[in-house]
Amino acid sequence: MSNLTNKKYEEFAFVLDYRPNSRSTLIKGRDGTIIQAIGLDRLTLLEILGSSEESFTITEKISIGKEGRSKVVSVLGKLSYTSLTNESRNSIPDVIEMIVDSNESFYVNYFNEAQAVTPRLHALELIPGIGKTFLRQILQEREKQPFSSFSDIQTRINLKEPGKLIAKRISEEVTGNVRLPLFVRV
Image (spheres, rainbow, N blue to C red):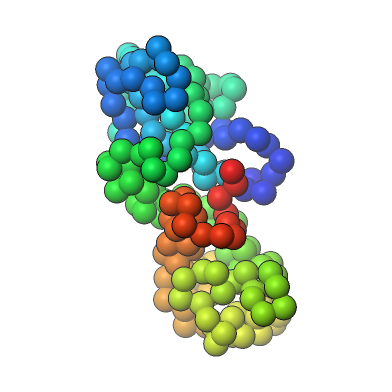
């Protein structure tokens, strides 16, 4: 995973919802299989035109990069959370958990490298469930030895399901209800 690379475009996305014989909400005259998806690296909400000969499943990982688009005709553009279908909104938590789980080392590294945002606020405190006590423990433990996995974090500081906490934060960012995004790149 290359979440903090300079690439502007997603290579892969996960299907949140798809509608065969539908119309694009972004581009007039584009119709067919319209897919709402979330990008793997930048966690961007996207509208995609899928190939009409292909079938899709919710949570499916599809290639949307310039090369190797076998099931996708084109990426139509970025979507706002408010323009998502109910199905897409309902799919977001599960899909984000899949993304976090499949890129565990990237998110564990966040626990190892996150810094203070302001003199009074540390970036780790923006993760749901992490207050001053857990923050202190995380900082002490990572100084001794970097964390190697979510289970390592759970064992060493007794923080329950750190992957789910990260996923919850990303879900909050995707909805646009946070002032300071940590993971979603717009």
